[in-house]
Length: 174
Image (cartoon, rainbow, N blue to C red; front, side):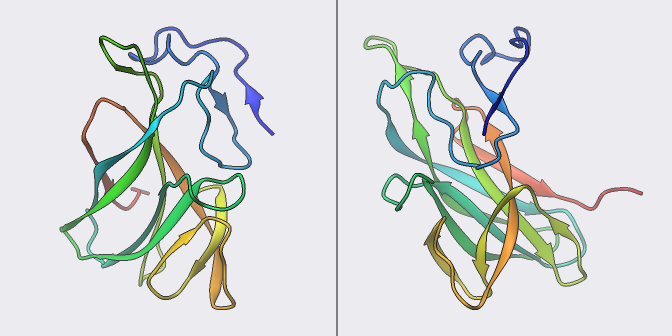
């Protein structure tokens, strides 16, 4: 179920006027559709995971995939080892929806999901649950196995104007 915003946010960055119908509390965690169907293409962007901790991180991410079964068009990838102080670059697919013939302008934010953990017990997680195996994998969202854990990934929404994005992992200060 989706919960509509009670009032549109009009002064929240350059996308507010373009996205008055965005929803909060996406229980199904599926990629949101554009306010109206225009079509779109799959675009590849660079995604960097930056480890700002003193422990080795293991990262899983999910990106857009229109060839996955069912209505959930996420493909999940993992595990990526990120040593302390280092970063790892992966290629991420996003649905690029644009408007206009002469001047092509994006009308939809780009999104991905992520989960990270270290060997000490710290976790960076969210509310989008799926089965994640213990070995290396590239699976559609609904795929699982007997050696999988049910983990919650966190959704990140990023600007469609940037060609790359860096996500930094650090421990919360107590």
